[in-house]
Image 1: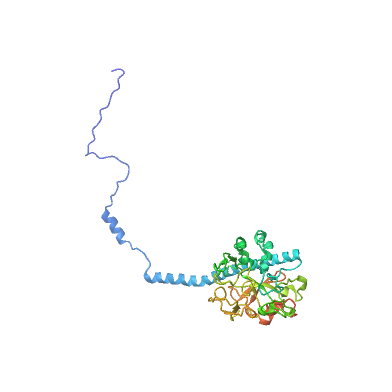
Image 2: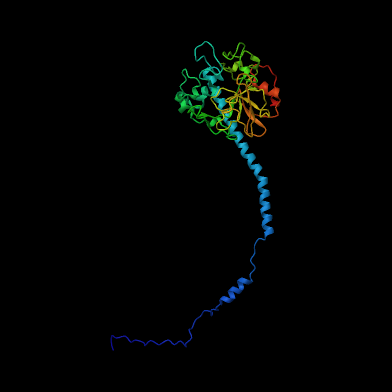
Length: 365
């Protein structure tokens, strides 16, 4: 019929017919054969002996590497400590440039107006107070109220200023005393720690006193042979260091005490507070003699032994550090040196004087 397309009938598919294909026949693998193949494959693993050997090797490597790592860390801490002292030295010389003298070690004055100055009378400011503007801490210095205050650093009016932490004054190898000293029964203030102690006259507290001193009256020392870089109510000029700036120590390392121990407090004008004498050599095995107050001084630690001084003449403190084998010191010319614990005591004491007349060989320290 015109216009109608013819339709081819659909041929039924029979299951008995084979499907023509150009691909290869698929071989079916039964599960029992897979399991058999896996079971026949040998699984490799460490034996107990091999594991123990590996652990032993790792332990030996750690034992060999750990001292090297600790040594590298200590070297980095010592470099940081030296850098801190260089900054302190820079502040000292900037102060000298401005004031034509280095700061006094401590200032005592006749607070009660009786015509005599007693030991530790008055506001008792240490050299660190005077250096604050040269540490870029002028704002802190301006917050201090001095006036006619006894122990101005304990006065509640100065709480905000004394609370300021001074990282530049801390050696990271120590850290025992934290960043501040605090004893609530003494007052509300907390005081910043320091690991860098000023070198004061002579061997003990007696060397800070001159003829005519008594319990009721303090007079400045006149023994110039034992004058050190720092003293009470005396400032040192660069031109007055007859032994030479490069042969004179001004600041040395010290250790802080427990959190409630006044050892290593920047504003405390006592031996082991912020200054040392040189009766004892660096890191001496002999004990320091601190102010006789067991609640706040001379607390025994594994690293430091203490005994009591008499609080009047015998108090003394040695330079100490957490670095192995020596202490870092700042010389009056601004140089920083690492001095061995084995230094001769006579040489150590010679480095502490400004007019002692000692002949020192730089190769001996």
